[in-house]
Image (cartoon, rainbow, N blue to C red; front, side, top):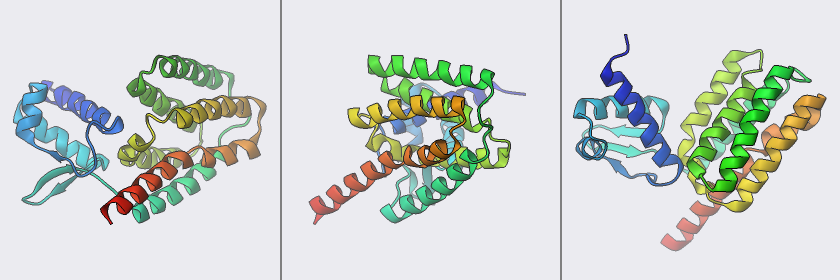
Length: 221
């Protein structure tokens, strides 16, 4: 049975996740139960439950006797994660039905239309929500659901990396173009093109992360 505490904790998880996506909460930033409870008008029990769930999702790090911080990655860790993501997405793209079923195409197109509308309106948080929905719907067509679930897990775990490019107009423009191309590839059965784009599409955030960390290292030096 879902309790009121469960619902509040789930809503708090989404709120903190959104703050991480858009950069309101930055890597290494401390998350204090008392402050979260006051900000969102919830009990400490709810705050604690939300932080535990965020830790399981890989979005925060719980340090014994030192509190909770927004998770950060070294360049080496991110590159290793993205290497795994590239392998997984290449394999999933090689397995999705081609051409895609008409009902799947209709749902993916509907998400893309809404994505473009929110992008034009500058609603970056909703753009990220719809971007998640777009890719989740595509990978849901993969017959190997364990593969799709592993992609989803790594996608969530690297949420904090996305803020490095979330407001970059050029990256957002490329994302829009890639989404439109993916839809055409799924319609036309262009397996080779879709497999290549499934990998290329995830690279710009990685490059933005690399640039940010190189600049940070140079500044520190």
